[in-house]
Length: 231
Image 1 (cartoon, helix red, strand yellow):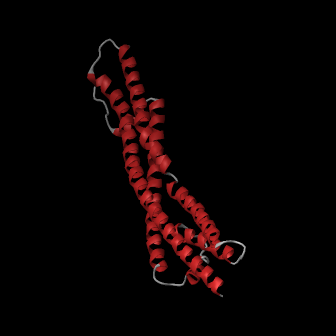
Image 2 (cartoon, rainbow, N blue to C red):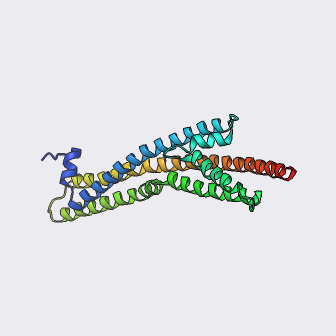
Image 3 (cartoon, rainbow, N blue to C red):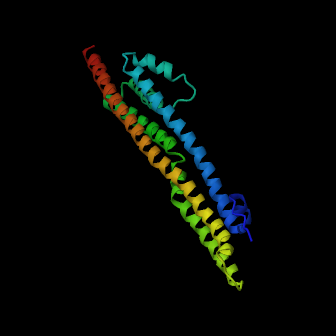
């Protein structure tokens, strides 16, 4: 007797639980790849926008002029959002004579910290899902494999004459679940490690800019305070 060992037939003939495991792993893989592509674009755009804004920031343009241009954008993100948050607080509080220059800069820095925290949350979104898929998919696939092999041996026990041809289809369809688990897990783990590294580098870039911008605000605050005392 010749047994159809094609992939399609093995999946169709699998038990209901093994089919559910395969479907779950396939769904996890599709969602993971969607998030991998989406996150790749987000990180790439964020890195490019950060480099572009930093070139404008250090080009010698007046900060007020730069602020007026940037804040008109509808969807601020990344380094632009940090800059606008800090400079907005700096301008708003610096006009008050009852607040010291140090307090103005500290408030602006706290505002930038909040903006940085929101950017980190945005950049790290979906990474936890990739980590979950990467760590659990092999075990889910292994569960389907164990269940399928167990059913194969249970069916084999009811037969008087056991042959490899009778056991092979059940074991093969069970091993498909393991293969699908690895297929879902490996890209998710690679993407998670890669994107986590990229996000850390980008956040460090944001943090360095924030510190440099804070130092610049401190110098401007000191100069303005000195001018007011002389005046």
